[in-house]
Picture (tube, rainbow, N blue to C red):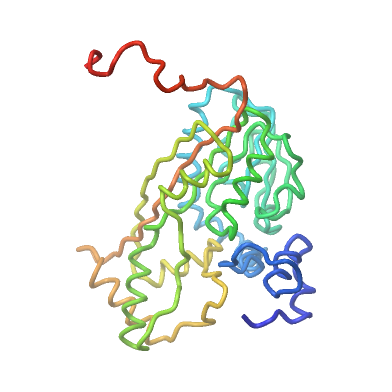
Amino acid sequence: MVPLRKHVLSRVPRFYTRSLASVAGTVAPAPYQIFDRYAKVIQKDRSAAPNRVENSRTVDYVRDEIADRLVERMLDIKRKFRTVLDLGSGPGHFAKLLETETTQKVVMFDSSKNLLHRDPDEEFEVEVERVVGDEENLLATIPRNSQEAVVSCLSLHWVNDLPGALTQIKEALVPDGVFLGAMFGGDTLFELRTSLQLAEIEREGGISPHVSPMTDTRDVSNLLGRAGLTLLTVDTDEITVNYPSMWELMEDLQAMGESNAIIGRRGYIRRDTLAAGSAIYKEMHGKEDGTIPATFQIIYMIGWKPSPSQPKPLERGSATKSLKEAL
């Protein structure tokens, strides 16, 4: 890996300095780095820059839909929270859907200042506090044992150390506090991934990553348990969005702040490769009406911080009747 230049490191926000320095080898090694977190902040800031705010709002459709489905899961928890921490909140897709019957206050936490402050307080029904910080270093900003509920709606797929982030979420919760999350799963944008790979093999004789690696449902269950959360619930869902062509899909991903941020990524894709990818996309996945589908796989997760008040499973062998008798 090419060492980071000093002038580049000096521009990094304070909460990223340590992790980036670790990549450069100047301090103790950090968890394996897949994503360029600083580049991701720049992409998100650019997507919500003052001259792009309206364009940013037009591409909220995926996040708004997933936030709505995540709120439904939260409403199944018959409890009112004093505060909810919205981790990786963006402009507040999830927070805008909360009502005073669910919580009094939402703490919106995001690494992008532009995105965090994109929409005014008037669009929220509950009280809002905005905090700029790093999801990978949550406990540097949020005290341990301080949150009744932590929610993450589509931000964890850009975290390098996912096990560490989930552990910090658990530590930030009070006993019997709940974590609800939604993140992109491994089948997200498989149509785009396969089309670009085939185009690169055809035009350039090799492939490079253009869509981020994402986790699997089984991995999420294991990671939640490893973090120390209990009473786990994990399920998946899919959203399919139709676009006129691959070009509109890629434009919307950029406007969402979801451009490629893998470390070592190529700075550009050749025009002829993109044209070939668009043609392959239409040929392999195109619909009769001329549109192309883009699939977003969503993994929903719920976990609770252990508490003596929670129900416990009976000890093995303590049953008084056999399953055979019950059937």
